[in-house]
Amino acid sequence: MALHSALKDELACLEQVVALLKKEQEVLASARIDQLSDITNNKTRLVAELENFSAVRLALMQTHNIPDDGSAIAGWLATHAPSSLDLWKTLIDLARQAAAYNRSNGQLLSGREEANRNLMRILLAEQDAETGYSADGRISHSSTRRPLDRA
Image (tube, rainbow, N blue to C red):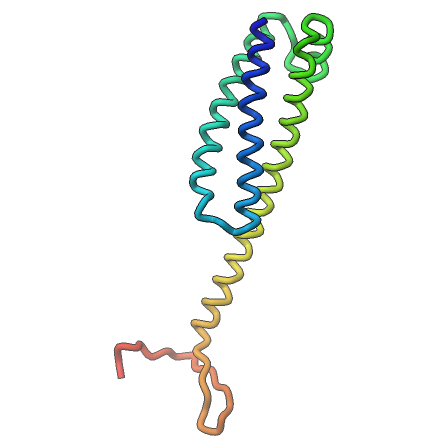
């Protein structure tokens, strides 16, 4: 059956997406930021493939007058294509897992961005503060800065 095949194709692609999201999470957690570019490119490609597989499945469902609703699909499959029901359930579970990874990765990325902003704020504040010592040994802050190329 074409719908069974479409579900298998969509599931295989979704498994690749979840594996990539898991790798992305590991990269973000360990701050191996240099690897994010390749992951992003692969994720973009895989998500486009997944959308194509989903479109094929949706078109096949429409030919059988199956509403695009999870429980309606499960009910139809249970009655008309029971061998595909487990594929559908696995697909739904994996889609939830992908969404969870995506949310978590977004939070990790936001945390990294916030840490970088704070670090830049600290570095810029230190650069502008030009701290020094006066003749009596006290810390002094100069508000004017002398260019290094002038005496």
